[in-house]
Image 1 (cartoon, protein in one colour):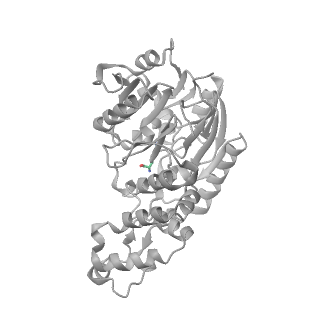
Image 2 (cartoon, protein in one colour):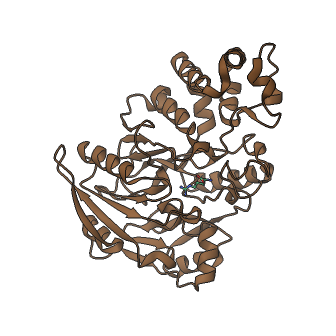
Image 3 (cartoon, protein in one colour):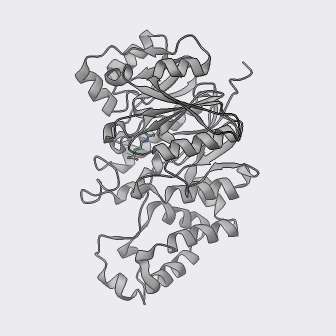
Length: 398
Ligand SMILES: NC(=[NH2+])NCCC[C@H](N)C(=O)O
């Protein structure tokens, strides 16, 4: 397990194959569950399988969060912790809590994993003593809320070298996701001995905002999801752990279209990014540096490209100028055109629908592996959002 860049050869990645949790989405709840449409579940699964296959065919090992979770749940401490996490919800009240506890205790690990991900609908549990809460609950409400955004494994954990940061998610609909990723890293034998760099009780940071620009340099988007306090905390942690010397805090518009830094900028080569042209030249960065344990030094904002090149010790951070007219650029940004996942330097996965952006990438010498995402994209996330790299070849010893 090791990640020190965005682009060196990808060896192992964690994905989440979408399942019954997507079937919970309705026109009544899709906004609060952060989806812009109601996905066709079977087609979303086909698209996701093709994404996984594209990665495997390039030699990448694909781990599935759902399988890791089921395996983790055969560890008694993990089972206790995850069950307790669900039962802690105050809205359950004592009677319903007791019924849910009994229900969960009866499930074998595979089914329990499914319940933790897909949630539990009112109809699925028929408690003999649900009490007032169950009786008064609307039939369309959930006893345990589903986690459709688990699909975007990028956000709930981030590897920085050999450590993993379990993040602190800002949106209510996603908070419970990190109880699952945290348990996987703590209890699954595959991750035994991994040191946790960050945890969900800390200030908000989401993985989509974190870019490992170079082995000692992180960029952290600050906007709708990651707060300045979250960026400061993560900077402190990575610097003290000797994982970075510089962290760039990059303000992004607090809007749904640009919810994470990776919706406007991703790396496609060791010294190149693809960037949403409408922001490319006015993105700024505050530079945070320190010696481990010493106070953080904060330098006033400068153009992002300049601050990044300096921190990365390169002459120039190339920007693949998609050169698109503002309307096409806006359409393709919305459909995650800038959200590419690098499999290796100059080789990335992208949604096929972003025809112009992909053509420009190819003109710039970047090979593009196209996947379809008509259904997957309805949650507003592309190949980078849907993947959590766990191992890449070290860039440091190239
Ligand atoms: N890294 C990303 N850009 N993730 C996209 C997450 C999309 C998800 N529906 C949300 O609103 O949270």
